[in-house]
Length: 210
Figure 1 (cartoon, rainbow, N blue to C red):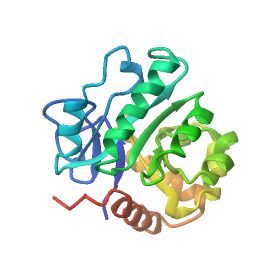
Figure 2: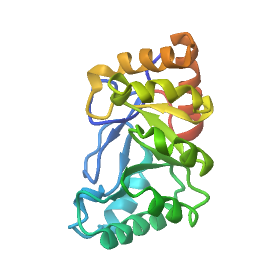
Figure 3: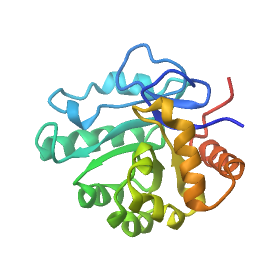
């Protein structure tokens, strides 16, 4: 069994992970592409995004989203976020969402793009769990589960078919993240591996082994 990783900045496991390429002209492996909200001081290059999303190894758009603490002012961030989502209407790729203190705005925008699957990357806010599940987000769990007791305790509330796992900036911790998620749900590691693989293949439907 493989450790599927839906969002990483590392290059160790390129055949079963989604590398965060941002707007790199030469992405590696299976990748996601998009303009991060921290980079919203720069205009969105629609031609480049279109080119990257049409690449056969691009599995998702992102990470894109909104951040109230960093980046351009929120009005500009919303404009660029929606701009990229509109480009993705042609491709209907899953959307890897970066969200910091902007959940209400993101939920409002999500209603206008019902054909796209939205994944909250690095989910760690227990207080938002009921709300994001109600609004049909997928949740990607990363290294925060190793440090946050309350997140560990709430993982079992996430429907297993809505769950993904990521390493983000902590590629070396991926196995530990998987093991901790398995313990939090009181399931065997192999059972979790099989389910995450099913979820990954269903959500990122362009993926093929190799």
